Length: 73
Image (cartoon, rainbow, N blue to C red):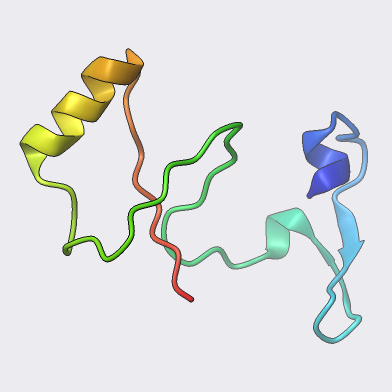
């Protein structure tokens, strides 16, 4: 992922860290929404989702739409 995001998009082949099997980024099964970002915001103990007015306030402050991606620990 790092090589690809840094601009080397010639080859998407990689070795998976879990089992050492060869795969391509296109073959990986991404469950749920995924994303790349240069900044992130973390909420401690959030509710089920942002309330619509909360999201609108955040988007207004940032001047850009927000995509919520849940991280499970």
